[in-house]
Image (cartoon, rainbow, N blue to C red; front, side, top):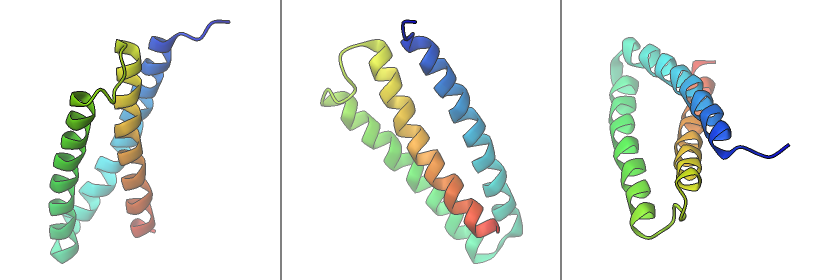
Length: 96
């Protein structure tokens, strides 16, 4: 059975959405608690988003996303899934 790159990208997009939902929930709980930890998390959230976007932009400008649309989409999804997964792990440990 041939591998369909767009089907894989669609599934990875769905996974990214599910992981992002978990991060949103964990961050909302942390922010709702208030205090210094919430302030730090809010600042971290904004700076991480800016850094992730700039990193991806640099990859695009230097050809690091590849030559095909499906390959570029896969690399973008992998980039954001790594970031979201790291935040999910970090926030899950803090919530425990």
